Image (cartoon, rainbow, N blue to C red; front, side, top):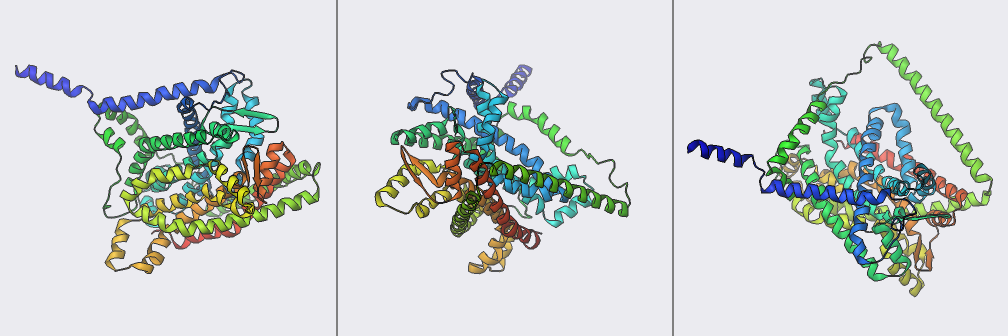
Length: 577
């Protein structure tokens, strides 16, 4: 009898528990949704249901699924880009000279600029299939997500505290081991917060990426963005509201199922010596911890990843050269890289001048320069305004775990709120009261950019060591001194990263915000964003290239002479160590 009871007890313990069943239901539900949504991505381009957009509310769940799949595909590509590009830029002084300015250029190129040239390429890559248009849309969303994440990861790798580096050196960790055992965990909290804001940034541009219209090429992909674009075109306020509610539901879903568990996971890597007073919480994490089968199934891949992170992977040629030989090798490689860079720059400049001067005149260049200057004034003024508001708010949220849990979905939704939704209100108010579009359209830019500052500051404040907070409290550092001598210097490196990416996002948002349409009514401000939007609508490629190039040059100059010195100052003087 006792053996029977023992056997029955062992059998019951081997069975999956209730939490396993719930977790497996969530996982299989996600897999079914992926299969169902991805089926439409491979339809023939001419299939009736491939590009048909209906304003019927019942289509919104399927449109939300298609948009979410595109955004997560772009997010995966952005993570791969971040871990390769940003790491290379942070680890190689020679590569940094080219990769960081190139990143400045890439983040300044507006999404419409990418779409103008990539749509034809991807449609040709997959002729007759929706996959080409899907790849163009995913690439466009990727361009709104990747640069911010890459800058955050690059900045984190550059600001690893000195004593942690010394500990890693004392344990003789190889570069591969140091990357996975120290640098990636240190960068994880900031990267997670920037991934969240990048996801929201993708929503801001989803209308442009799903309703592709460049010259004579027009493709509407089923999704919330194209639904919203059609609702705006047909002046359907009820459909606009339905799209917003759908967006909110999707954002809450992926916040609870993905980002909240990731924030909980990232809180394990805070740089502090004492235990944090408050723990991040996630019901998904609690559910997983109580599962039996699911934990057993994930144990093997977790062990495999842990073993991979401990590989040494030393370079066999390292250390064979004498110091003098290594110095000569560095000089030669520097010279070769500079020559290659100059040659590539001169060739690009020649191509650019040859392309635009065949159909444009000097007056067009002067006009583009003046309009870019006007947009730059808007961007700087709005970044200053956003900093004054969101830096103190971000610090307070980042230091309060419970408050962060409550406001995280709200801030993600507000960050994802497309400026296009406000077009009806903006156009009606400006036309009704004869307001100046140069002033009142400017505020649309801030809707897509201020959140980079907020999320980065929240990320920086949430990783501020608890032991330093306790030390400040012990020495009675309060009030103005607490802000200026403790918290503002602590979050300044994160703020610079956020402001830098917000600046790039503002230039991009100018394309949407300076040229606003509601039905057949158009309101336009003076700026390079409106210039590019009009050229894109007309399929005027020389003016698109001129506008994008002028904008890129202004962004590079601004970054080189303003944001980069601030970033170096943060690395040199405000690094936690």
